[in-house]
Amino acid sequence: MDPGLDRHEWSTEFAQIEEGMHDDPFDALPALTELVGRMLGERGYELDPGRDEGGIVHEFADAKAISEQGADAGPGDVALALQKLVGIYEFLDDQRRAP
Image (cartoon, rainbow, N blue to C red; front, side, top):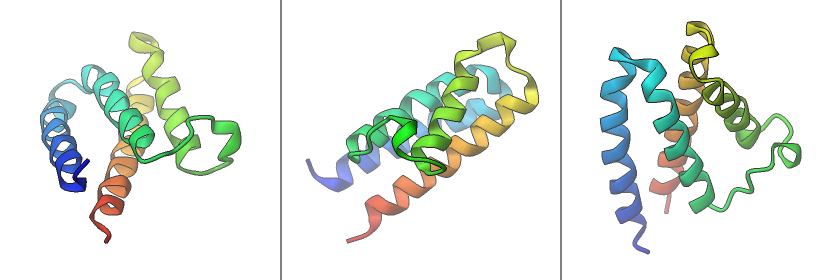
């Protein structure tokens, strides 16, 4: 697959999610979790946090756990999860740009 194609798809999807993050972070969290999970998989990351102590997959697992709490997650937890996921998204997007 052309590296620019998936990056374009990711950025388009992220832009749509990003709009909702300010208006309804609780609704945006599962969508961003799903996007970042796909991105990690497509970039070859094994989504087993036990194999990535303290790394990017561990950060993703923490955010995903908050996402799975749904309405039981507190606003601060949701904000932290979104912050982690945006950071992972930006890292993967930058990684895709590298030659």
